[in-house]
Amino acid sequence: MSRETSDSGIETAVNVLIALALAIYLAYLAVYVNYAVALFGFPFDYDQGEGFELVDSILLSRGEWPYRSVEEYPFYSSNYPPLFHIFAAPFVLVFGPRYWIGRALSFLATLINAALIGYAVWRETRDRKLSALSGLAFLASNYVYHVGPLFRQHMTMVMFETAAIVTIHRFDEIQSVIRRCKVILLGLLLLLAAGYTKQLAVITVAAFFGYMFLRRPKSAVVYGLILAVVAGIIFIWIDLATDGAWSLNIITANYNEYIVGQFLGLARQWFLLHRVILLLAAGLALYELYFDRLSVYSVWFAFAVAGNTLAGKWGAGESYFATSIAAACILAGIALHKLIGLFEGKARKFAWVARFAVPILFIIQAGYLVHMPTYGPIFGSLADLLGLPDGGEYYDSVGYTQIGRPPTRADTEAGVRIAGYIESDPRPAMSEDAGFSIYAGREVVGNPTQLLNLYNNGLFDPTEMVRWIDNQMFGVVILRAQFYPPPVLDAIGAAYDEVARIEMNGFEYIIMRPDPDYEPQVSPPEPMGGRSGRHGHGDGRDGG
Amino acid sequence: MPRGDFVITKRMLGIALIVAGLLICTVMYLPVERIGIGRSQGFGPVQQAGIVFGIIVAVLGVPLLFMDGRPA
Image 1 (tube, rainbow over the protein chains, first blue to last red):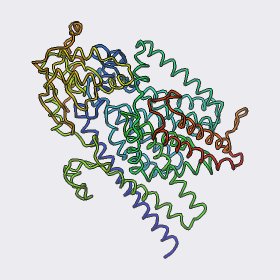
Image 2 (image 1 turned 90 degrees about the vertical axis):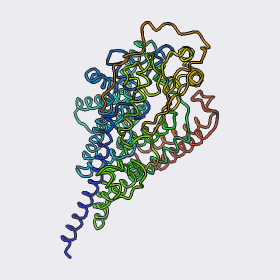
Image 3 (image 1 turned 90 degrees about the horizontal axis):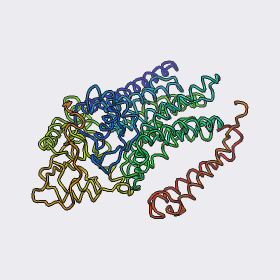
Image 4 (image 1 turned 30 degrees about the horizontal axis):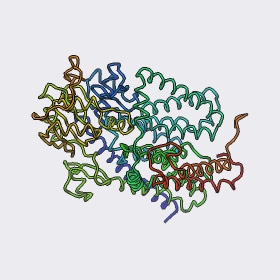
């Protein structure tokens, strides 16, 4: 067999494997789109907290800040910065309070993020297939899949982080001073956007300036000061506009308990799920540390991995690992390209090994990420083909997961039944999920996790809320995880009786009505000034 | 390299990593309530994990000390 025939055979085999790898990752994309479309049509909270982000968008669409005192009715405040909700606000004005707005925005952010990852790899390698695989690997991550199409701000923050890092890459090699300034200022703007989408972006801010400091220390100091001044002015402006509620709810209330077991469990899962791209990324970062100049991607990866430790905070979760996954996808793509270059330069005879490694490693990585519905004509057949276990509607290599299964018609019907309890009573309702109140066109009362955070930090006096509960001012109380502060839960237990338990999305919701035999223990609250709790936010019946 | 801007070398980065690692270890070893961060009760698993992390950061910096003046 001639050398040319052998090379051509290897080329064909590599191309077939790359096509197979691309097909697998496109199948993951199809699973992701299917999940996103199912969520767009689901008019209730799928993940606890989505509804409160919708409330923030509603308030901002009315020109009101969502940062307020939680010690008076409706006992509500947000604990997130406003940018994501500002994006959603105009759509809320046009379409009403619909969950699909924020879900579609977040889903779009993940697609842009994947495109940015692909672009970052392409810019370094000029290899379109490798770039596509790197971008698609991000979307195939179980974590990105789970939280991507939710009405949560996290993935929008990650998109801005990636955009900032991709922008600043090799900034010091730009010869034109004006162009270099423009690139840095664009990077700063994207960092600012990331930070005002979610506080966690502080990790990427540190990586951004760490890289700048390595390349141009003076520039890092000057531009760092510029960012600090601009971010500080915005911070002070919002704090003054909200009478201090902004800093209280955004900063002070976020000192949560740290749960080591939670972090270790998530970190182990994160590593095992993404082990191929993480090892490639770590390998390239170490190579750059000792044998090359450190790229912004390696610095970002190192900071993001260190920042993963924040996933041990109470209330944190798998989404906290998304930044490190984005950084790892970029580094993995570049690492594989460098590997091919290394072999071609120093061991040409074995260069084919490196070329085979690209699709094979991506295929092995795909094998660790399996997640898909296991019913329906397409996914059902595919699940049978893959030999996925029967007995559920959804399979995830993570194991048990609260999110990921596309919601069904039964879930929507259960949500409508729960909202029916709110509609059947003219009094306001107190619900751990905001979605039922929004669906019924009522004002959303309380944000349980935020109330608990504030309470645990000695910043929430529940006396007034307990007064409302004790005097049975709420027509119905709906509990899911019972995240309210202990005195609030005690008051609910005393003044309300359970009347039903309804399952939705795998969670059991406890419906409670006022106990007719209960005698209030404290004086009633001040009159509500005509507020009946009706039509608080318009209704959220998009119905799918 | 722009005029007036200095170069961070591999060796300087190595020193920075070692100092940062030792600083992390020191902060983690000190009783948390004494330096007023968090609500942890003294030395526990968080502090142990922090010390391990600090040692890794410091060890990563050691080989860089033996490198020439290449930029980081």
